[in-house]
Length: 249
Image (cartoon, rainbow, N blue to C red):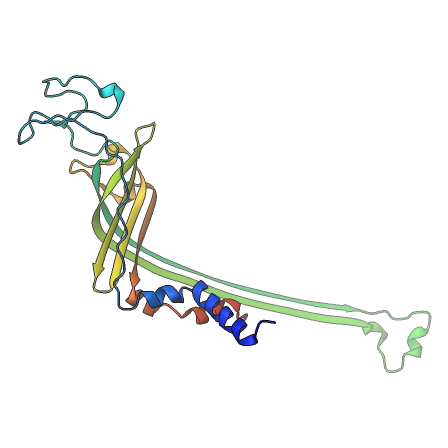
């Protein structure tokens, strides 16, 4: 038989591990770790003759581009000389302007009242009414009902995010739209702030300064949060969270 104390210690250890306490203990006195940069595809291009410095040509990685370099200023696949500098290919970088100033106020109120009254009687019933002393045959059955309901609800929320970040074109869809993803992390002392944005952008919506507004990103996913000692201090302890989830009242 396994001693009772060993079972208690094993249960306590498993509960601590499942609630992330061990990870928190390991992070005592340490700053939050920055995430590693994601690998991004960036096709090789040839530098334009108009670029500064000595002209150095890169060989394309694909077999289709394995052609001898030409001296044209406008050859396909070269860095632009006077062309469009906006993001258009996998690996290009564009600026995302995030200006979220949403506010919603919702309120509703409902009231319901219902009442009913029923009364039935009979003047005579084969003389049986005389067998019921003290009763009124005209009021043999009578009933009343009343129901009242009142409900009120309101929702008020406001979000404000105003910042600018860069994103990378991760893929080009068959119709020309661009899949973008950007991630920015800022660590101040023991708190890490993280901003992630992803979605689909039309090339026509990219401005001349190679920027796009967050309202022009389809399937936009914008996440702004953080992790660190301040974030942990603002959260209820795991025991309180379990109690709130299980307590029915």
